[in-house]
Length: 245
Image 1 (tube, rainbow, N blue to C red):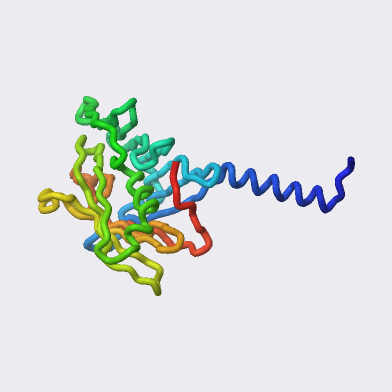
Image 2 (tube, rainbow, N blue to C red):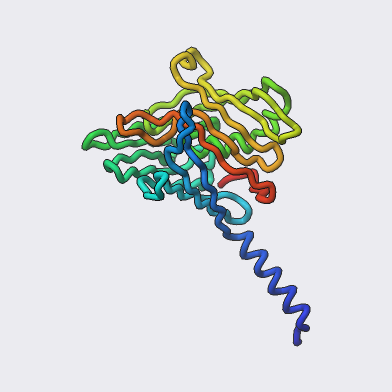
């Protein structure tokens, strides 16, 4: 049986659509600004891979304002997207940190001097880490949009500190005209008096992260984490999938 030209064209379009849905890469650039001065510190250059409509991995290249690369982070979401396997490598001094799920444990590691330190914690359904925090917020955004003051509780693992602590995300403000929700993430105990809070802004329609204000995962020349405001450009036509992994 011979197919008509129209049928062949339709088949080609369908095949192309399936291929794009199966695997595609979305590139995002975040500008990390000094929280006090507004000066550009570096950029986050994301190459997010989607497969079957879900985010499966991300490669983040960190670049100075002049374009020079100085660090790379790889994230693999797998079947545990809220606490993914990840590793950050800083070429300036060979520092690295990361974490991975091993059985019923989540093992964090970091370079400290000439040694690699490790600590594992028990796995739980409330565990989040690194970029998985963003995945968790996207998934639970309907709860957070219910009302001002709505909140969700999680356990946040911080590989750079080899520690975990209870954290909560609270809705601060919902702006339906701008289609933006502002959130505050903080320790859910008295540790919030010493652990800096994080301010976040998400698009309520596409669930895009628009702004992150808080300590970065990148260290300055003194070894301290940058205090940043990271801005991501809004793309009304992007409509990213709300799920990871």
